[in-house]
Structure formats: C-alpha cells, structure tokens
Image 1 (cartoon, one colour):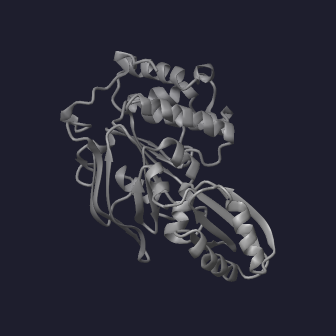
Image 2 (cartoon, rainbow, N blue to C red):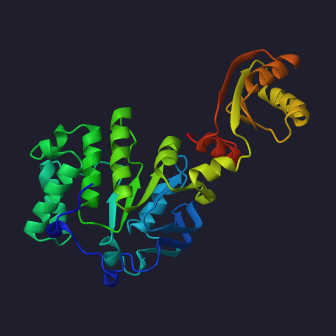
Image 3 (tube, helix red, strand yellow):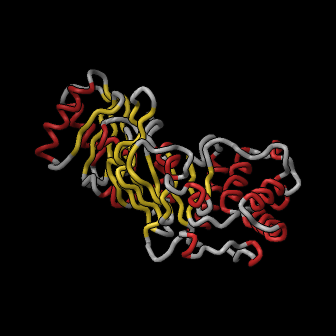
Length: 338
C-alpha cells in the first residue's frame, strides 16, 4: 500500500497525545455504564489495547460492545471509571480525544446530499485540513479503497458493501491514531464482507490500531490479533484467537441431535467418555449435545456407537474444529448468536 501524500497527512505528534511512547493506546479502568432503569450495560471494564493491533470485542447483541465503543469515542458518558485513548481522558477532554480517533458506526451516516468524493473532502475540512490537503486526501482514499470510479456518484447509488467501504475511507481520512468499527459487516453479502476484510487487513499491515466489535466469530478469528469475549457487560476471556481455542483443551467438537431428552443423552455420553476419553467435555446447547474431544480420529463413530448403545436414535451428527463460538459456549452455556 502506498504512502499518503504529504499534503493529506496530519502529523501524529506526542503533543497531541496520539501515540507517544506508551504502546498501550486504549485503556479503561473500571469503566461502567448504567442506563436508566438500572440497566447495567458495561460492568467495571478493565482493558488495554496495544498500538498497531486489531483488537476484537466479540459477543452477542446486548453484550455491551457498542456501549463500550460509545464511551471510548465520547458518544456515551460513562457512569463510572475512566477511559483513555491515545493517553487522553475521553471524559475530561472529549474534544481532544475526537481528534485522534476515527469512528465507523453500525448505521450508514454518509451525507446523502453529497457525492462520494464530497463526503471525504468535507470530512477532511471538518477535521481542520486545508482545501488542498483535503482534496489530496479524498483522491488518495478513493484510490486506496477502490472507489475512484464512483467519485461523482450520489451516495444513494452505492451498494451496501461500497457504502461501508466509503465509511471506512471517511473514518481513516484524517489519519486517526485509533479506529473504532462497530459491527462493520452486518448486513453485507459474503463478497462485500470479504472485500471489507481485505481493506481492514491492508490498514492493519500499515500499522493502524483498530478496535472492532462484532458478533461474527469468523470475522474476529480472521482479523484480530487479540479478542475479548464479552457478555452482560463483562470480559469473560481475553487472548489471541488461537489461545482462546486452545484453552478448551479439545481440538475436535462433535454435535449430536438425537430423539429423546438431550439431558439423558448428555449424561450417558459423559459417563461413557469419562473412561474412554478422559478430559472430554459434554454440554447441551439449544437441544443439541456438544462433545469436545482431543483428537478427531474415530470421533464420529465413537459418539454414534455410544449413543446407540444407550438406546438413543441419532438424527444428526457433525464434527468440526473448536471455534470462538465454542469458547463462548463453554463460558456461558449459550449460543453466541443469541
């Protein structure tokens, strides 16, 4: 990826607090948000994000991901605790904090009265760029995000994927130290999702720090250096995607659906596997029995035979590798998509 033209670049100096010498560029201390009605959205969150990483907040809808990003980007006022971006206290100095962050929200906030190019140009002007610098930055980002052929198009003419790409281009236009993306691929078709992942990968390779909230396990697994699994406003686990999956102690998962109460099947399998496959993990999720095993060889026939020996008629049987969703299920006992 080429370098941003000098005229389009805003310098990130230590005086503006963007990076300095501290490798931690996002930090929260007991960050809490309680909405009216005593609804606890974020519960004493302690978090550190390092410069240059893609950090994922993974969890179901309502987990507190959007509220967390809202507090870090000054859009939501915390009830308690502290939050810093680029060394700047977001509550004490929100205006300063806004200058070092870029935000790509869930909803399309592009100006429908402006063209694609104008959305970028006026964003640059809003962030204090001179006319020449803003024009150069808009031209560069259009080329970088492969939108040059749409420069004069009205925003309503863009597909969902192209509009989302433009939102990311706008968010990065003023060269923020940190980017926040809230569910960036929600509603996109698979092709558009892959195209946006490629764009985010390019930004990451250029050293851009990104906080990404998502409920797509594949997105978090593919893009993120580290992932915090979140539910009910709390961090349940935090590690690299690989580390989270290895924490299960199993490298194979068999999902079984059978006639009869799933609890009986789970109890039977747990009893039989305790002797044959020590360390196996059996749990029930949405009327299906999930069995975590070490080693894939012979896993399917083993589970099928044990179920049939217990008098259960198996309707469906599948085997897969553990995913981040498997980790979430092991922590909460429920499906990540709930």
